[in-house]
Image (cartoon, rainbow, N blue to C red):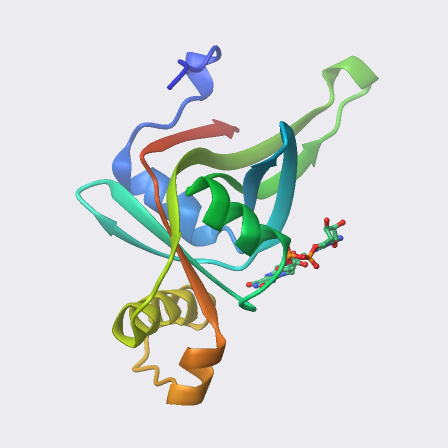
Length: 159
Ligand SMILES: Cc1cc2nc3c(=O)[nH]c(=O)nc-3n(C[C@H](O)[C@H](O)[C@H](O)COP(=O)(O)OP(=O)(O)OC[C@H]3O[C@@H](n4cnc5c(N)ncnc54)[C@H](O)[C@@H]3O)c2cc1C
């Protein structure tokens, strides 16, 4: 992974990275089609173990992103939060605060109902808080659930 140019803005503290991810409500997947980027915003859930993040997304079973994930087995991602314009007397002194996470990793469509339920639970916990959450068989069958293992992850904050 390429090093961040502005080291002073890099976030490396694990607890802070988790806090920023938890505060984001939309994750954009970056997929590749014939050398061109396809960016698609999605709701997401996540699990974290020893600093390694797994992200989950749900979707219809068909469509462009599903085709591209099947084709390449890889997705880049980006999420951000905490936008705030900081004004000043002069335009060049304006700035905009943000907290942002990006990275990439292998992405796959989950096969078993058990795996899909685990992904959907992560999504619900992120969107709505601790469960228990239950999902009917027909709903689980109808949904595609994408799992992205974040092999690369960086976090940047402008305060
Ligand atoms: C904040 C947010 C959260 C979302 N959460 C989810 C989610 O959790 N699950 C989910 O399945 N979808 C979600 N969506 C919708 C998602 O962005 C896609 O529209 C949807 O997943 C279909 O993607 P696709 O690649 O299958 O689209 P397809 O219909 O196969 O794409 C075909 C074309 O439609 C256009 N298109 C597709 N999506 C969009 C879009 N969002 N805006 C403008 N043009 C578009 C593009 O030109 C694309 O090339 C969310 C959207 C937003 C803005």
